[in-house]
Amino acid sequence: MSTHVDLAVVGGGISGLAAAWEGERRGASVAVLEAADRPGGKLQTSSLAGVPLDEAADAFLARVPAAVELCDELGIATELVAPASVGAYVWLDGRLRKLPPDQVLGVPTDLDAVAAAGLLSPAGVERAREDLTRPDDRPRGPDGEPVDESVGDLVRRRLGDEVLDRLVGPLVGSVYAGDCDRLSLQVVAAQLAAARDLDPAEPSLIRSVIALRDQAPVGERPLFLAPREGMGALVGALVDALGDAVRTGTAVEALVPEGTRWRLAPTDVTAGAVVLTTPAFATAPLLAPLGGGAAEAAAVIGEIDHASVALVSLAVPRDGVEHELDGTGFLVPRSAGLLLTACSWVTTKWPHLDHDPSLVLLRASVGRDGDERALGLTDDELVARVLDDLGTTMGLRAAPVEVRVSRWPRSFPQPRPGHRDRVAAAEAALARSAPRIVTAGAWTHGVGVPTCIRTARAATARALGATTGA
Ligand SMILES: Cc1cc2nc3c(=O)[nH]c(=O)nc-3n(C[C@H](O)[C@H](O)[C@H](O)COP(=O)(O)OP(=O)(O)OC[C@H]3O[C@@H](n4cnc5c(N)ncnc54)[C@H](O)[C@@H]3O)c2cc1C
Image (cartoon, rainbow, N blue to C red; front, side):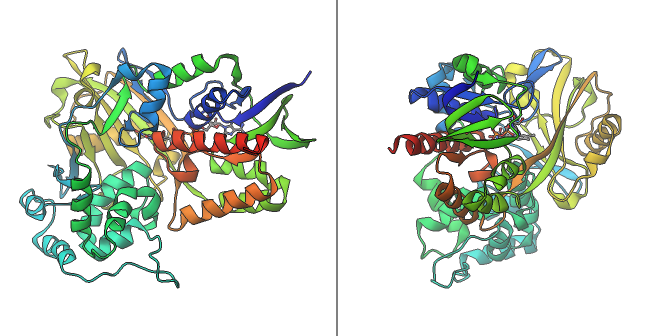
């Protein structure tokens, strides 16, 4: 016997669960079909040294309200905690240097402070200062309107190579495990794009960023939040709320038209509307066989590159670390040549996880766009290489008492310059030939958890609107 629902959601990561939640709130009957044997996708929390520690995402941006709002709706907003505001380090010239608090995505707002902290060479500071007097040089299309460019193009042009390689690159690149020279400014550094748009007559990036910061001062509000028990608590609350609607161990292989409905083959589920929240490389093969605009969309979606990462989480004796753990952790620029890309000092960043006075918890990241060395290593080799890099950077001298390796192959979609226009064209092509199938997920409008939630809820509204003509 078939199961008929109003809305089928393919993929049970945060995008899929948020889409289903939105569907139910709009009164639709819903089924979520998830290939893995557990829901949550890249949100996964498990225990290390007796505390709940995230295996991938460990916090969400509070400034984009969608995640906080969802937690509120689910009744878990009171369980949100903020990381300690103790600053972070960057590995430069063979030592860890504290990042200045006065920066936006690595663009310094106080060049004297950056110079004093030794973050840039004197020549690098002078080159950055040129931004204040350089004429407008933003790239424009044939119609004279500004066009998207890479983060690297903007920052190198305005502030010079050092600011990109030593400040913006490590910060922005780490969010996408990407290479700033190949990442879309609009998608990846929306704050910098917004700063530029504030006053199109203002050529200076530094002054634009200061104007943006002054317009919405951060004040006492935390920048990031997370559930006390880890991001798995958000997944758990959604799954509890959705109940039987979530089916795990159920991979969708094809969308088969049946009258005015779609069957999610090989299952017996048929739906009036479908939200695809699968990664780009899993979405394209579902759309391509449908032909027409869906195949056009598939061609665009299938071209999106992905970076692979792995996280090595460690419990180590507190007295086995030389560097004082007085920050949330540190970032490693691409140019340093280490395997390590970042390390989170978990027990400093999240004081509620600091239970054992004899241990500290660390989360070391490896892998980024163009660096797949970790993929070829066994877990033992990977841990040994990470321990070497942690010895070099933060003076880790003791053997870990507990280790966990979390591998995330092809986990970070890479939005290249012009990504937003290409996704809009793909969505329009799909809407032309299959208006009741819509796409969401990290590859569409950005990887951040709040953006995924916002995108998925909007996509659900579109899909259900197409079935009712609303
Ligand atoms: C290591 C790491 C750290 C991160 N840190 C942060 C952070 O701190 N803050 C933040 O905001 N973001 C962070 N992110 C990004 C964020 O976690 C992800 O972008 C987001 O969770 C993606 O959610 P999603 O639902 O779109 O995709 P996914 O979580 O990938 O979910 C897609 C789901 O689709 C399923 N699927 C695939 N094919 C099929 C099929 N054919 N049929 C059915 N199901 C299928 C998959 O099994 C998967 O569960 C991080 C990501 C990683 C990898």
